[in-house]
Length: 185
Ligand SMILES: [Fe+2]
Ligand SMILES: [Fe+2]
Image 1 (cartoon, rainbow, N blue to C red):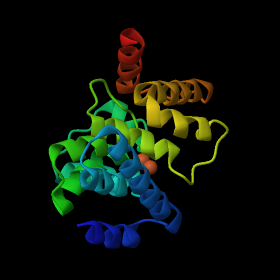
Image 2: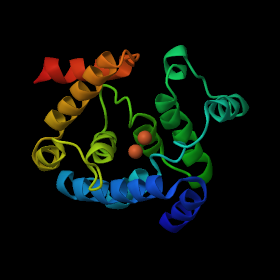
Image 3: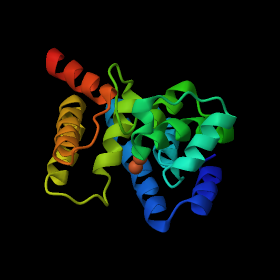
Image 4: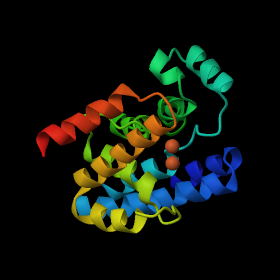
């Protein structure tokens, strides 16, 4: 399965995105070992998480239409959101991903409340994989080994603040995720 996904990704993704996918796979494995979930499942999900990232908005719309996927206005506002939703469906169709794996692909950008451990791991692995470079990334890599929830809170806050500063829409699922963490810790 891993080989099939890799071969497919090589065809449709840029080298840079392909390398990012490999790094997310490796980081997901590392976190899966720490947090005690199935390693194979984490690796495959990490590998495939950006499978739809390089499609155009027209291609998303087309795919959604032909596969009966419901797209709401919030999803449509941002191509970044669309790649999770469409990607999850492609993973199901092409590689028989389980519902849990599909959800982790689907929500890796927005997050949501009540995330499974796999969803959390993919969400975090995407942001802290070894080729990511930003000021706080090393701290987050260390924190992720000890406190996944706090790592997610920092990432969500950063994303929300960035969205505000750039006058971008905020996805309600990210707000729900943030509130869940704030109200429960
Ligand atoms: Fe992504
Ligand atoms: Fe990604």
